[in-house]
Amino acid sequence: MHYFKNITIVDKTKYIFVTGGVTSSLGKGIIAASLGKLLQARGFRVTNQKLDPYINVDPGTLNPYEHGECYVTVDGHEADLDLGHYERFLNVETHKANNVTTGRIYQNVINKERRGDFLGKTVQIIPHITDEIKRNIKSLGSKGEYDFVITEIGGTVGDIESLPYIESVRQLRWELGKNCLIVHLTYVPYLAAAKELKTKPTQHSVKALQEQGVQPDILVLRTEHNISMEMRKKVALFCNVEPHAVMQSIDVPSIYRVPLNMMAEKLDEVVLAKMGFDSATTPVADMEKWTAFVEKLENAKDEVRIALVGKYVQLPDSYKSIIESLIHASAYNNRKLKLDLILSDKLNDENIEKRLGKVDGILIAPGFGTRGMEGKFSALRFARERNIPCLGICMGMQTMSIEFARNVLGFKDANSTEIDPTTPNNIVDIMDEQKNVLDLGGSMRLGAFECSLTPGSKAAAIYGETTIRERHRHRYEFNNAYKEQFEAAGMTCSGVNEESHLVEIIELNSHKWYIGVQFHPEYRSTVVNPHPLFISFIQAAIQ
Image 1 (cartoon, one colour):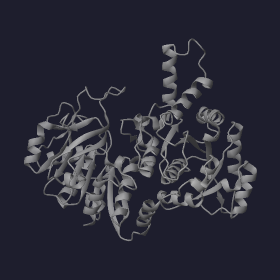
Image 2 (cartoon, one colour; image 1 turned 120 degrees about the vertical axis):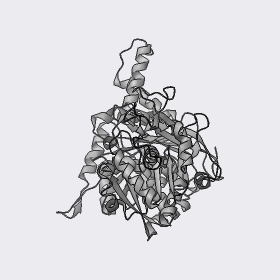
Image 3 (cartoon, helix red, strand yellow; image 1 turned 60 degrees about the vertical axis):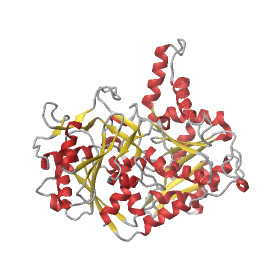
């Protein structure tokens, strides 16, 4: 299985586990994605996986304030937002197998027990739960499609929720031998009063991991200050890790600098050496395109000011993929993104000029529920009448439709069935029950679907083609009963799913740049392939 002429043959899939200690939110996902990027840049086939310790079957039912955005894979799985990092870094699509929760593990085991698969045996954490965890981990490598599977263990070592996962890692370490490696991420705090860094939390974190039978091979120390070689040797001594395998991950202004920093720390080099690769026959990482992007991002001088109008803006992670897509597009347009997060609940016709009067572009965010819709209507009318570039995503497109119906077509009561199913002028209609039905009982359209673009439309010009495939996560759709009236008034339905006749894209003909999309283009934007819709939106905002 050669990927470069001089690369060592990978005879078996290698498994790397990234665990975290001391505190949550250290950036395990970014370290896992960075390592994946570095190995990929050497010519290896890599995928990332996230194991989440919560009991929800998936994050689809979680409030965005609880867990940030719900990411959607091409095969229609609602997943953890870290999968977005994986795709943005590796430019490789993820699937249902890339995100596993405790809820799904237990659900699978209980279903097997109910079917009689265990032949009457007592079902226990060990071996039944751990076997199911191991099966899910190894499923990605079992088909021979990847050289490396990098699995991030959610939570913090010592948490009761993560114990079965750490136990599964312990077992796999012995089953896989040199084909398994553990990277442990910890925190080295700086005490301002003492004016020094402290390694004791790291020592305790590694001790907790060792007590569960797992010895890390590599330590990555998160820090706000550079860690000296002397301190690294101290950590190595107390944690049974070789000094060259103790690395720092210092705070940086952008997550996209992290892979370059970890390459400077020789993370990929140490990983390959520990897994039996000969450095003389392994290509160096080709990070030329990545470095060019980071330089554009860090060196941009002029700003582009975008207002993101949504109902969850108090937690920016609720719109993580959208924000990162705006960052990608701004950098490629040689601009530094200045993002205004605007709470739609607090927006109205009286304060709209004050809040949005100085922005270059407006993005109306997705969401569920009626809260904040009226504020979105105010923002949309402002953008439409002032000729301000505006992008509506999912519910953003639906509110675009309603605002246009109210203020241009004259349907003053126009709304969606979510507000009042009996109201006439339901511009946004609920999908029929034959489409993907969730356990919750509601209709949900999930995953990637094809969309045909009208030749000569702005959408077709932006994409450079007339057939596209984008990911969805919605219950409601444009009501085709009003399509002719919309188009007669200048709102073109320029993207349609031919099979379901679902309107996917609307655009205002007379406007500088006013486009709404039913799908989520942010899920497809990556560092090396920023999404064309975001690129075009930022270009219009600059002009």
